[in-house]
Image (cartoon, rainbow, N blue to C red; front, top):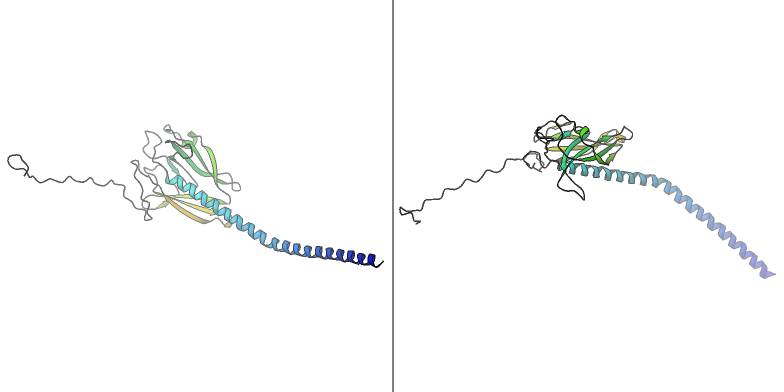
Length: 245
């Protein structure tokens, strides 16, 4: 009889232990939930901020590489100026082909915004270059393809163009030369539309002769070829007999 009583007491004590363990586990889970609910939104905001920074940096790098590789190519034989249409929020110009299967051809690259305020995005598209008939608009003649989204809302990217005097202007077209430098400014409309990042790049070739622009920060360069060395007059060491002394 006493053996059965002892077994009953032990079973009851084990049940109390299990209930206590469940209560402690519930308290621990509640504490973890409270802590997680506080730091998880902050962690998500930090992750979103990092992803946005990476997207902006990649867009600036891609656009800067395109501008730096711009080529002085006339639209046709009649026009002498380069095919370069620079506006505040878009640009169209010629550059060398790029990609794993790129050859020695040329591409017409268009970088510009598309969409409305809520769905606006900065896209890069390309088309194979060919001479444009005189009087034909670039946008209507070329069929741009392979669009790639570089930047999406709430970010915007604007462009400014400068000659060798580094005087910036929001438009560049119908000029006899390519711009010497292009400035790219990224705006964040979720923070009042103010600029958050600015970068500038020098165009490597800005003259029809293939002159290279200086890459220094001073913005000055000299595209004139070095003067040819003047031949030095050799002293006359011959005697009257026509023999060299």
